[in-house]
Length: 203
Image (cartoon, rainbow, N blue to C red):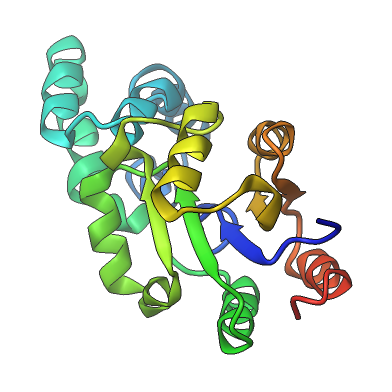
């Protein structure tokens, strides 16, 4: 096929904003260096990825608090105030999703997301209900860029990679998708995405 007929969205960085700094700037007032040290060495990206891969937040918080008891309240905030890390959706990209759906284009999602937090996020943003199907890493214990999550997606929804445009703000993820036969789109702006989808006559 020379163009895709299905569009698959990543969520964080494409449809919604997510960054723990939105929360921790409130907790490390006027201490950017302290915040960055905490997010690098305590509630690190590696620690967070384990929740994306399926570990529960209760287990994650207990494990980390045992190692850093002096930061117990700050660690608990990662779980208890998680929604404050995800303050808004990207309206311009959501508008593209809505237009695709209105035109009858099948739309799906593949996201690295902790399962228990995605349900909270889904209730906040009604546009997730427009998607024809979603694979959440925390549910399937597979994470991008592992090819397995893309293969799981194709098998679960009966699709071929050559049908699908996959949009992600991580080039590592889009490169893996491209190698598997998807039309990988590295997301940098809604304007660029709109132009690409228009070239494919999906918009």
